[in-house]
Picture 1 (cartoon, helix red, strand yellow):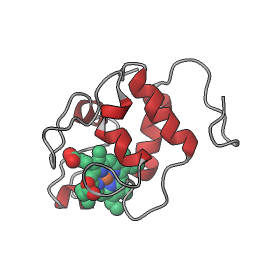
Picture 2 (cartoon, rainbow, N blue to C red):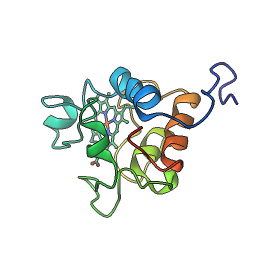
Picture 3 (spheres, rainbow, N blue to C red):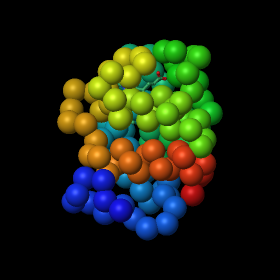
Picture 4 (cartoon, rainbow, N blue to C red):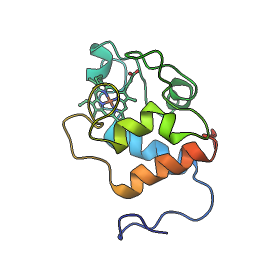
Length: 121
Ligand code: HEC
């Protein structure tokens, strides 16, 4: 299955370590780490490899504590997904901030990872 016509998705379940963490490392960690722009703005979401899972899954948004960053099995209720997939997320701006959006294939990987249960796999 291919979502952008260029990059085939890997077969089988999405792996958090193999498929998702490299996206964060490439596009998110520069701001989402201690001392990064997000951290300095009061958003303590740490997306480094050893912190990302526990920072996201079943964790409330700092800005909108009624929203959850990752709701296992429900991407459409997960602020992480809404902020990378939509130009008009429920709070703040599309991520990555002030940069090109993720590719359609990367957005689909995040959606699929969440809807497969958001495992630390
Ligand atoms: C240039 C710096 C920058 C980059 C790069 C960036 N972010 Fe952010 N992020 C921010 C800032 C600043 C905020 C707070 C304002 C907002 O939500 O728009 C934020 C907020 C968030 C929030 C909401 C956190 C909360 O608790 O409310 C999520 C989720 C998020 N970012 C995910 C990501 C992801 C995933 C990526 C990479 C695809 C990414 N960000 C890349 C700066 C950045």
